[in-house]
Image (cartoon, rainbow, N blue to C red; front, side, top):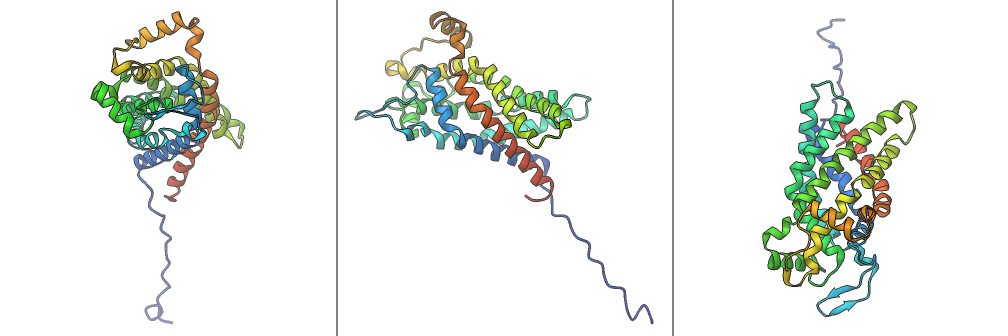
Length: 298
């Protein structure tokens, strides 16, 4: 037979689905995991905030019409605002995280130390966006008169404190977020590298839970101080001068006036109960999204 008359059948080469750019993967994984963590454990976050300022865990709503009985739904006060604020925060955080990680890849540095540096860069880059949302969230969680809805909280803050009120506690937030994110990602990488040789089926879950719990406990004093600084104005009449002037002053005053250094650990148990499962959820979702993207599934 003449080969030219009967050409060989064409072989079809299966094309791999296009893969997402690593930066887009990092941002998508961070936003997805952050949203899951925020929404799943928001009630515990509210209870931690109330515990840190000495408010009852279930507080009456101080509306303009007067106090109303506490309601379970009030522990979700500010959750929509927190979720909306998490989106630009995660975008900036994980962009800086990825760029720092990529820049350090050329050096012979341990994976855990790379994550520590990347977490630090992410926290610094995203602070300007995160502080206003977190400050309003804290005020909403306390359900004080004039701060019971996002609109009222924003209006009251601007009326009594101006735009600067939205950035109340900027230094304390940075002082907490830098070690928090450095430890969170660094401890996760360290725990995962230690557990991976054992080939446990729940390496990511165990590493995430351990990183979340340890990070929460170690940063509780800074979180307490940050919450106090961001919310103290709402307990003073007409935005009068606040008592605490900064991080150092808050630490020394709380320790001196509230029973010693252990007062700085108020809410530590609730924070550990929140951040152990939230760390587990965050890193399981984070790693799952990154794997899915690497296989072309996104």
